[in-house]
Amino acid sequence: MCSCQCSVPRSLWLGCANLVESMCALSCLQSMPSVRCLQNTSVMEDQNEDESPKKNTLWQISNGTSSVIVSRKRPSEGNYQKEKDLCIKYFDQWSESDQVEFVEHLISRMCHYQHGHINSYLKPMLQRDFITALPEQGLDHIAENILSYLDARSLCAAELVCKEWQRVISEGMLWKKLIERMVRTDPLWKGLSERRGWDQYLFKNRPTDGPPNSFYRSLYPKIIQDIETIESNWRCGRHNLQRIQCRSENSKGVYCLQYDDEKIISGLRDNSIKIWDKTSLECLKVLTGHTGSVLCLQYDERVIVTGSSDSTVRVWDVNTGEVLNTLIHHNEAVLHLRFSNGLMVTCSKDRSIAVWDMASATDITLRRVLVGHRAAVNVVDFDDKYIVSASGDRTIKVWSTSTCEFVRTLNGHKRGIACLQYRDRLVVSGSSDNTIRLWDIECGACLRVLEGHEELVRCIRFDNKRIVSGAYDGKIKVWDLQAALDPRAPASTLCLRTLVEHSGRVFRLQFDEFQIISSSHDDTILIWDFLNVPPSAQNETRSPSRTYTYISR
Image (cartoon, rainbow, N blue to C red; front, top):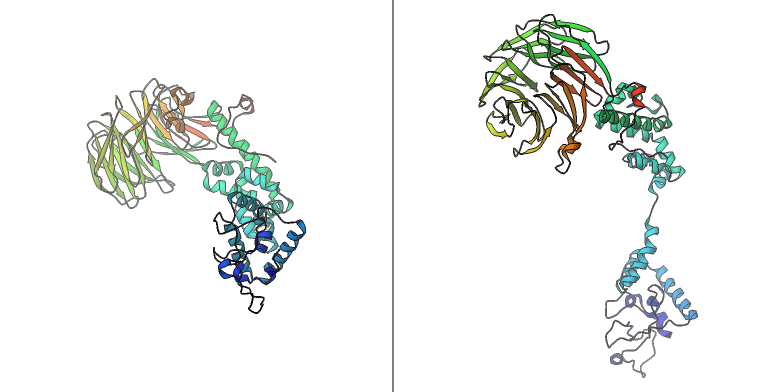
């Protein structure tokens, strides 16, 4: 070991490439072999000059050039320890920024496998249990907020990390927050919370207003079990059936309906509109005024709008049943109508489509008449972008909602089209060719043809999971929408279940996550309940659910 090493200035230790780290630095911090200290022959010290501690010495390390010499051999352990201690002594005297600069210099001189060793050494040092550390700084709310983004599987795992994590989850009521998040974003959860009654424990401002976290921790698996049961009931066709006998005095048949949690409103062939209590199934009110069959209807919290074979559209007060307005425009039967956000569209057997501005129940004005179909227009639907119409002429036509200009025609059905629904880019239509077709409205392509009904497909609805169709064969079919949109899915797997209870043609249906409500030529309204299924039916073999997963701890 050179006697000059103790006087090496730090500027040389941190020098550029031609004045690299000293033997001390490399011996300890870089853990490389000792280097020999050589005096550069071009700068040899004049022996006649006065001796000084500041010698003009060049410290070099082997880098493969002929001008540098390195010892590959580690010196004796005693020397190494002394050199290391001395390097650490100098290192400790420097500022943090100087220390970082020096270590960066050392690392830049190392090879790849040495970098790997250093990385393995640093990785655990850089890890922090921030969930435990944050509450120690009085930041419990941040730890809770971070964990509140976890799903159920991850939240279960987080509870098992340590007692502190479990405490944060418990005191932060994170199981409650998870359930509330699901209720806000998933209609199935929202509907289930209302039907099962546990919505009363959610969205409380103060923690003292509700039960402890353990209640929600045990509630979550029960909700999952309920959801899996509902999904299984849909797939296996298990349901509880309720029947409303409409008892029409003259001609029998229920052409249209709509429902909510409290009531069902139906339009009948006998020219009347009947309002039913959804719980007791009793008839609450009968509205009369049309002189023809009530073929279509829609209602909101203020009005009921109906269309009839008497060619008129009537507007009724939903609470009192009073007639507020009568629109006389179409020359033949009004076959279908839709209204939303101040706009109403009606269609008729007279082959036309009428677009109305609906400022209020009494202030409804005709904006535009759309003409182009060559037969009766059986159904319309619309959103802010498109109006979609389907006709007995076998075509679906697309119009601009804002300008009412024609956009394109969807061709493919072999016979007239009786029903459709449109949402986002998807149009689903049913026809008297006994098929259902799925269309991309933007490009006009037919995405899938569903076959299975034996007669005209009269009504159709879809949500994010299913298509439900009703036909003149008296059958209701439930289809897997996601599979139908997958071109690889075999056609034989698309129909999940066929429900047969009506004794006549199925005219109209609607459904949600828990039920289907349908009406028929047999003068009945059927409620197919997939939530409240009798225990005897539940004992049947359950099909696996692919939608929800719960891992218990």
